[in-house]
Structures are given as C-alpha cells and as structure tokens.
Image 1 (cartoon, rainbow, N blue to C red):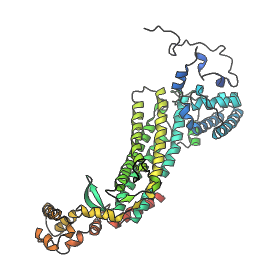
Image 2: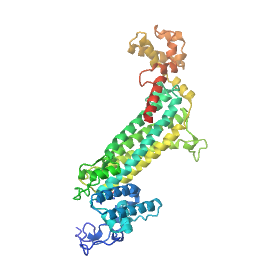
Image 3: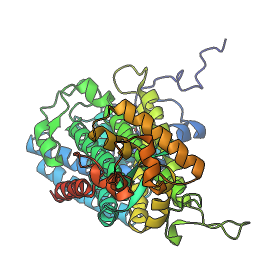
Image 4: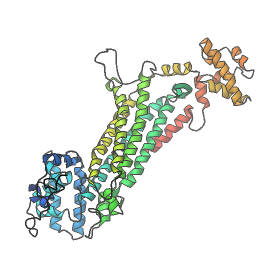
Length: 489
Ligand code: ARG
C-alpha cells in the first residue's frame, strides 16, 4: 500500500490562499500556472498538464467562446450584475482578442488548459478587473456546453447547404439520363432494367432524408445551457432568455444538471453523419464498380483518379474509395461518443472533454466528403451503350414477358414458369429473349402473340413501369421536378 503521500494530485494538501480577502491583481490568472491553483500545494507534472489540456484541439471553438462570453456579459450588465464600464472593457478586450486570433498572433498556453481559460486570461491581461468579472454566474461547464452547441450549429447549417449541393449534382446527371437504360440489380445479379436517372434518384432520396434528419436534430441542438453554471444553476438573477435570444437559441435547457452533462446532441449529430456517410459509401462503391473494366458503365475525371507506381495502365478511383473508407472512421466516432457517455454519473465529468476530437473529425470528414463527391458526380462520364449491353445480357425483361402473359389471362405463377422455360432455351442458345424467333417463343405458350416482342425491349420494359415511384421516364421526370422544387424552397 502506498501511503497517502502528498506528491500525488489526489493526495495534495489543500492550502488556503495566502490572503483570501485580498483581490487578485490584474493579470494574476495569467501568471498562475493554473486558474484554480490557489488550493494546490504543488504544480502539475508536465505529463498531467499535457494529458488534461484540451487547448490543442478546442481552440477552434474560439469564435463561439467569444460570442457566448459577450452575450453573457451584456446580460450581466443589463441586470446590473456588472457595471456598464465593465461591459465596455470586456467588449473592447474581446475585439482585440478576436483580431489576435484571426491574425494568428494569439499565444495559446498549454498551462491554461483550454480555450476558455486562455481567452479569459488574455482578457484579464488586457482589461484588468472587468475581465475577472466576466465569469460571474458562469462555469466552464455551461460555457463549454454552450460553445460546442454554437459551433456545431454553424457547421450543421453549412452541411445543410452541402447536402443540397450533393442532391443537385445527382439531379443534374439524372436529368440527362431519364431514358438511359442500365440493368437494375438484386443480389448484384441483373434483375430488371431501370433508367440511370432512376438509380441516381434513389440517392437523392437518401440525401434528402439526411437533410431532414439534420434539420430535426438542429432543433434539439439549438438550446442554451448557459445559466446552469457548474451544475445547480446560480444565485445571480440571470436573464437566460435574453442570452438565448442574442445567441439565436430557440430555447433554454430547462434543467441545469442536464444542461451541463448532456451530449446527446453530439450523439445525434454523429448518428446523422454516420448514416449520411453510409449513403455516400454505397454511392462510392457503385462508382468504383461501374468504373471497373468489367462494368465500364462510367468513367471518372482524371482529377479524381490516381495512377499506380508499378502498373502503368492503372487509373484508380481513389477518391471514391477513400469516401467509402472514411465512412468507417465516422461510424467509429459515433461508437466512441456513445461509449463516452455510458456510465457517466450526473453532472459534468471531465470525460466530456473527449467529445471534441471525434465530433470535430466527424464534421470535417463529412463536409469534405460531401464536397468532393458532389464535384465528382457532376463530372461523371456516362456510357449508355455499355449499360444497355449489360442489361441485355441478363434477361432483364423476363418479368415483362410474364406480366404480358398475365395481361392475357394467365395466373402470375404459371406465367413465371412459362418464362423460366423460355429463358432456359435462350440461355442454351446464347441469345437474349428478344432474339428468340417469335415462333419459338409461341411454342412456350399459345397466348404469346406478335405484340410480345415490344414488351421484351429494354425501352418497353422501362415505359411499362408507370406506377408512382417507378422507373418510367415520366416518373423519373416527376421525381426530378419534385426535388428541384423542394431544393429551391
Ligand atoms: N475543457 C473542458 C471540456 O472540454 C471545459 C470544461 C471544464 N470544466 C471543468 N469543470 N473542469 O469539457
């Protein structure tokens, strides 16, 4: 057993500040090695400093941190909790800090742990006592929760635009290919002809749902934690609604414990991002397949491909492969964040500092991926003949012949059986159904007439699927018009 020696942080002796009644001088926060160190009898080791600091990654919250602080300060002044001069000083100091950070002149200090303490210390250095009054009625716990929500809200709004761009890119290609026939697959076996437009429009539906999910989670994200202080609320007469209004939050978080400890907005966001990345990944996988010599349905512009260091003939679809691969990383972040929350007692725990890197990386990965995929899709080269040849090879219109027989009065199961025999014969002869002489087709069933030949064509098959949501060109056009109208609004 190790005795309770005082060279560990947990065993540190709590000592009183030398003169508790004496206020801290101007830039004491900056001079001290830690914001709360008056209680501690020994400094942190370098390793612990590095281990616990988040400033290396949470500095990107700086705009949200300053905006949140200014809204808090204005409310404090409006409520008479700080003076008008204090507010003016805080505003002046924050304006300078904003400039320093923008111009990369701001000195981030590891010993000041995170973005919040770095900015507050600099503020106090610049404006003195007013800077020290800023944290009245506030804790880093409600501050960080507010910052992350504010920051993520900005990213969510940017991604709503990126998702719309992605849909427009797909629509642009779809518009040119409502009559381009390709094989539709189930089990990756040729199933029935579909138009290339129809296939792409399936992805438009997916990305449209992603956009809906994003808009929906934004409502729950857009609530203000500030005013909850450390965990219990505060005794100062804060006006939380005023702060919410100023920061564009739709409401305030109604329970202070929940406000500082909850990160489910981040989980929802990561779940949304994972689903969107899975949609991207499926599209990327199809682009890779279609570009392979065995399909040869499409080509991708050179700028999205890379060569091989050994095989001179290679043009690999690396961008699509990476988009597919990066979906794994985003789904991993969702798992990391969910696991991070599991088992945390209320309220704030330092575990929550671990929400940032996965969240930031999720946002970055999805934004980059949506951008690059939209560009790549817009420039896709489509090879209609290759698609058509592939559709013809796979007896894609067999169902159409069965449906024809049903229209003539046969029961569907019987029609299915008749056509299976016809396909078997065509397979043995190495031809398509449409290439069998009419007389031979008629031998399979007397109801087969000359008009059957039209239904066996790819175009005939496409045109027949007029049901709402089907692959007929008029249906695809209706889908496109609906999406165009939605994306304008
Ligand atoms: N850097 C911290 C985080 O990201 C800020 C909150 C710190 N609060 C605290 N009580 N230590 O979670």
